[in-house]
Image (cartoon, rainbow, N blue to C red; front, side, top):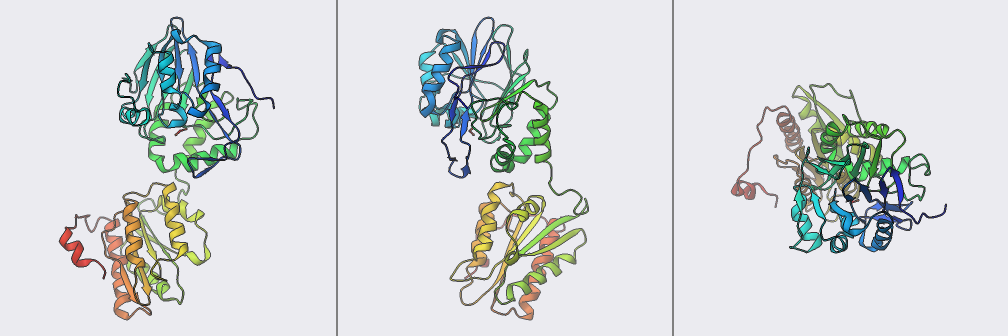
Length: 423
Ligand code: FEO
């Protein structure tokens, strides 16, 4: 594969002018990029003027300007659109605005504060656009769609109406660098597409569905994302795939009317396991709640994340060992950042030898993830007593009552919180 040097026409008068970063092996610290990535930006020529859609990471600005200069003069540029302000797309913006000072910048409403924080230029002028706003370039019309939280609050998409090209930002993108650029020419990038969705978009599933409601009715000839291959062959299939990925993975597993409570536990001597059973028994006394118990000793976290994404309530049982909850519990809790868990119901319980910090630590983590934790967790020193198992049953029962609306969510005062905190 010979690296491309020139701007690449993707439709009459519309060019890819982005940059290739084949050597990148990690993105945003956590994402593996075995195939590197591309920073896609585009130039749209209208009859009267020219628009640039997104820029590139600052380190790759030279590539971007070289390609831009092949297809437009700076004094022709009337319009700069930033669909997303993350530095991999805004890095070359200050220099572009310096070279094309007459150009107007178009960003989403939520991008204003980010622009100031990222570009550190209070003088920079910009226009706010929302769904339905347009910019006329002369026989080329840019039509904006507000698609926030894909995956930052500022994200938007831009359609060239006359060419049915959607500049989609990160959505429908992936980290896959291949100089052949187009989806019908590059290597097999399906894994990268799915990996990108699951690590970048999945936590914002509800926003993906909102965006799809806006974008699905469009006639799409080309989807031109901000990373990875340009989707010119069967573009709608990628939209359909997003619909599938954003839909619940586990259909028809529980009755539609049922709430789902998952109880995860791990146990050294069977004590926390006994408590988990009791939590489950208590929850099952309330109709309308499907209770499931899982022993983390025997399970990896991946299938559990799918279950948790669809669940309404989560209870975690861990012994306290060396003043901490145990690693399998933390592993599962740390994986929850990849899905939306806010507002689910959470609780903790467990057996301990002499201190019992695990319960508070788990509860703190659950609150940090924005779960509701309205019920005090249950701790039992070593082998749980009959009374302590009854407390576990009551914990399960209360969780189920919260899930079914039999106990209303209430705000706990600070004094109540202090009096009930563990010592
Ligand atoms: Fe490709 Fe969210 O930046």
